[in-house]
Image (cartoon, helix red, strand yellow):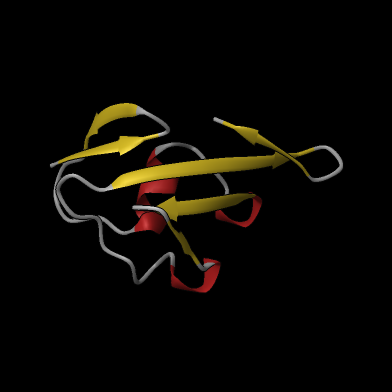
Amino acid sequence: MNVTVNGENRRVEGSKTVEQLLEDLGLDGRKVAVERNREIVPKSQYSDVTLFEGDKFEIVHFIGGGAPESL
């Protein structure tokens, strides 16, 4: 399926969760904030939220003193 991550189209194979997407991207789920289709995904739901064709994600990675940095 195709999803968009921070404005880039990405092909995702099979059924995945937000948690698995983050793993595929090499990101630590504890250090990012995820927005899916303009709605924040709570960290507690990363393993429960399934990706769907056409989903649009914005992922922000926190670095240093907590300042957000877009990927």
